[in-house]
Length: 123
View 1 (cartoon, rainbow, N blue to C red):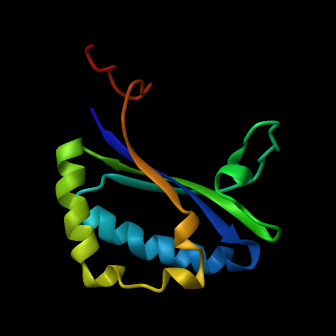
View 2: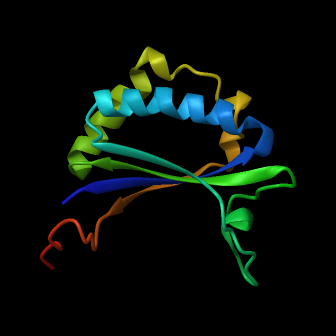
């Protein structure tokens, strides 16, 4: 069963294309080091919630939107090994500050519980 890294990232509206270009470069690095898929999604329908929502979770400010993204790895072990290689790869020395505030990036690793494209893991 796959392993997923998930991200929520606040991005200034006027930096959408800069972010897209940076994400495409980073995706190539992740795929070169074992990721099987990289998906980047620009917020389109982000309703405000009474308790929390995507904009609030990412502390997005006026003039910002939220990117929701995920990276698919074959396993947790592949992700752990691949991530070390990604972070050491010189192509990852890009200027993230030009497209988003990395201090407000939310990320984490997730074990897949259900995937309609794959068999469910045995419990």
